[in-house]
Length: 312
Image (cartoon, rainbow, N blue to C red; front, side, top):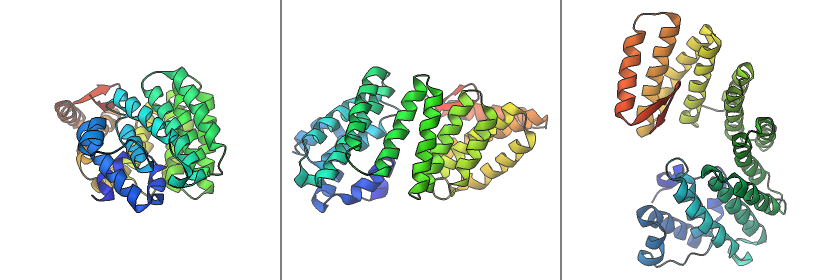
């Protein structure tokens, strides 16, 4: 099974941690990951005859939990709970003392994030305290940035937009320091979204520009396209027609690099955006473009929320 098969299930830090596993534990990760996708925990323990222990199984649980974040919050929480328990049973011989501490910190952070997605904010706060308590025992800037990034989302949801913005600035600074420009750009783009939600549209445009400047479109075309879509909405909201035209042109330059199911949604969202720009500029064809994109997105199971289209 190739890495590209499961790469979308991985959080940013997991992409760093998996290569550190021994060959035996990498194989256990792949087996557990496959079985979890086929039949959940019972498939691992019965069909796979695997014990719920060891770093490979823990990584598989974390990966499947992360992958469920958009469509199954209860499954996300269930798997994160088990991953936390598996991490608690790790020994130094599995990964070394520091490696065990890092995986335990990540497991607590993923449990915190799962509590957040499930709407259990007090439990999320407590779980993050456990995560940071362990991360403070190691000198790992990537881990710190990853945990802070997750925590910022919780702060924003709890209404602390200022705190979330400060944390994301720290995250961007850390990733810039360790030369992770794509992750720094992602944090800046998230910061831009929060600024827009808070009504700080000019700041949102600036932060979006700073985030996009850090990312090569070929590296992460979906992220770049998402950021450009958000930027286009901001430009329309501000009446910045020239910026809307420029952003739309950039979108057209990237959409061909997106493959698979994502390409359909991106192309249709782009079509919707184009109709909005044409409509705003009073140009011919706007209504036809809007109607076609609206009908096709709806047929594919998307629902409109304001100016956004989300999978139902």
